[in-house]
Length: 293
Image (tube, rainbow, N blue to C red; front, side, top):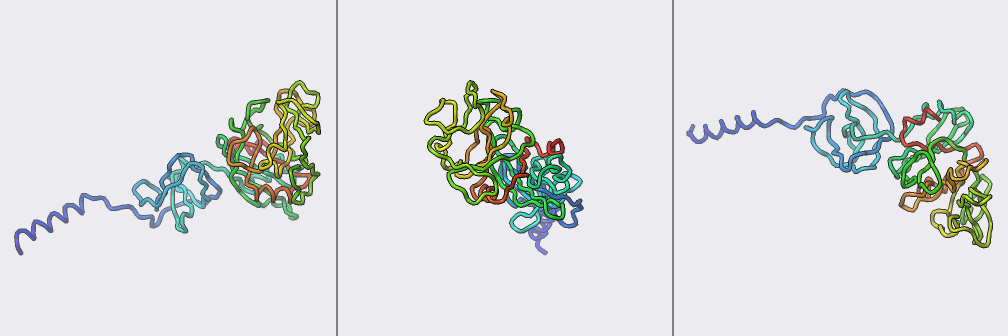
């Protein structure tokens, strides 16, 4: 054998020892778990196995949702990505969905047959619609993206643009058109105002007037958002002036709200036609807060 050939083979063998082979995902030990999780990092790598040495399959962006089916001891979550098993670090994933068991254990479930659960990350939100079946079990009808107030979810007050945290009954439906709601419905007219002026005796109520204070919301000025709407009964029974007004569940326009909860038109239409009187909404800044309501 020529000397050059011997040197070449030796070099190849040396390099093969120095270069670490890419890990494979064979026989990865996991525990079963489930739920929808949202990416919290601006860019999160998706890999073929639970670690940074595994092949990169793609990228999740902040707010992207994955449906987790398993978890490793090292804190990586497994989910389907482009029809394949994939993994991402749990340090950058936040749970935004609930289980039927978690919903059933809430105080709200004892007085409601339908629950809209909202988990916000800043002004972005993940909204679930849960229905209690005739056998007493809860079933999720849908999970969708939406928006809350530009200041997120928390303690609300007039002018703050924050969605009130807590559990509230969903009141009557309203809008520019009625898709066939089972709730009491009010159609918006040129004279429809929601009163947000704290000096007005009719604070936080719907009024029909020829004109109103500039602080009041002229409902017909928002034909996209208010094509379909449902009143969130926060501060409505005996309105406390300054505590916040005009909180609705309505059609999303792609932007943060002034404190309302907004979801895509198709999903909002589904709520309009299916929600009945015993329906509530739970608004949270973290899914773990669900057990408090």
